[in-house]
Amino acid sequence: MKIEVNNAVFSLPYHVALEEGYFADEGIDVELIPAGSGRNRDKEVPSEPILDHKKVKSYGWHEGIEKGEYSMYRACEWGQIRRTQDSNEGAQVISKRAAVATQALVVCDDSSYNIPSDLKGVTVGVNMHAGSHYVTLALLEGYLSQSEIQPGHVGGPKQRLKFLEDGKIGAAALMEPWITVAVKRGHKIICEAFYEGAEVGVPSLDPKGYAGVDRAIRTAVDRINVNITPYLKFMAQEVPPEFAQISDEDFYLGRFRYVYPRPYTPEEYERIYDWMVARDLLSPESRFESIVDSRLTA
Image (cartoon, rainbow, N blue to C red; front, side):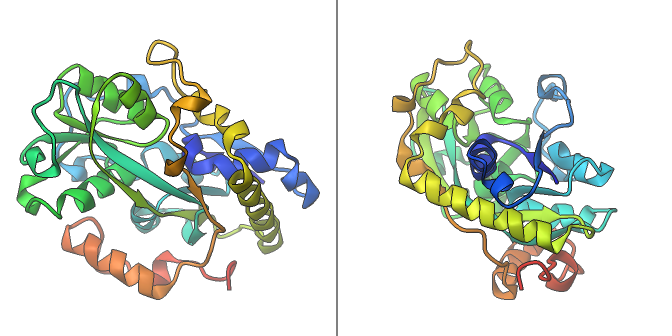
């Protein structure tokens, strides 16, 4: 099975399962495909943040599933719902992912912004139709009206941090290891939130193969929760040395939460559906039955 892995914080159980032989124990030959299909994010950065989400394709870094490059991948649940709606290959949400991630809104160390309401009208660097985009909206809506919140598409977390330091945006939404990088570089966290994600699979995904992957991931989650330290290397490796030298001691381990994958319920979907439709992020026609494939987790 070919499975996409994006940022290590989201796909850590897959790296652990491969390294520790848990896929092999299940009799599954798994190949982990790096997100982006060889693309260079540094060459795809806009000159200025894109403020209209309709001008940014929802697939972004995960278009490989539409090209048959892999059969499964994971990302934030809002983004997975939107990408499923936009899929031309019938890919659907199949379960919640194992990673419960966090995004932090970060500003430069010398910024006058200190609380979420200070970000009124301030461009926050995000990756549109990804966790950084949706978490930014959800976080700031507790303090500001929708019209006062201004996400701007930049690209990946490294690119967002660079835009912040170059003064092109006033704040950036970052996940690990880039929260740790930002703190080490002296920047300030304004607010932070945990959020769930979802697995997406193609219609041809083999149920027995998926069941084996699920068991391997659960074993990996148990291993991570006993001691995550040996696997922090997967996150540290994502940071170019010119940004920071990250050691295990630099990470705040409370930011890392991994749970067993589980079915996506209609009740959970309806809550997210209502939120996305109200913000013109999803078509009203995208009901649970067209987005979620429950056959693998039933």
